Length: 248
Image (cartoon, rainbow, N blue to C red):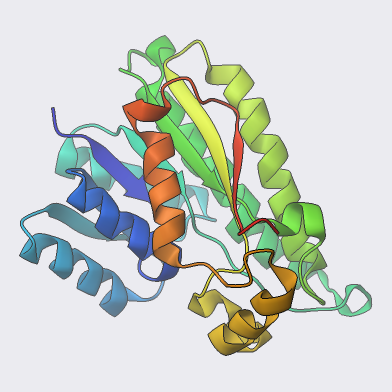
């Protein structure tokens, strides 16, 4: 039976790379986006053009009503959900003494609240406790959770630490219900999420001295890890945190 994967925040960067690789591996792909409809549609067109199955669904996964609408759309299009990748997130740059409530709320809603809302809906569909057939959830964290992130990124690093803890807790909750939960922690990856911190050129230069492999990573390298964790080849991998960071 063809499996279905939903990747939040998958119009660009790592999310788009996961969507493209998932299609190559035979998944039906739900591409979620918040604002960038053109990029999401481009990802879908590429998948359809290669003979795959994909749809683009607009939803702000930091809002519970949008999340319900997102999962309902996946249900209508594909009938079931096998894999959820909680990839949506934002960076932001702000020193602690300048942090206001709106900034904190924006970053925590995008990075942490979204993971609770989407995982809740996925568990209701996948869990054998609720009549589901099982599945896999892969959460996107960052090595910032243990390194503290870049200057001005304390709120981002804190959200990624929350993701690590949430993933372990969720794994303990649903491990006997057919759902595997794992976490991927990328390091310095060349995507446009770093535009606030000098862009990919800055990432490449920083990697030469900060990363033991002396290079930055690609979105495709992260995608390979995510799809492996979602696959039967990782059938006994549960509650794990996998760093994709070149040894950093």
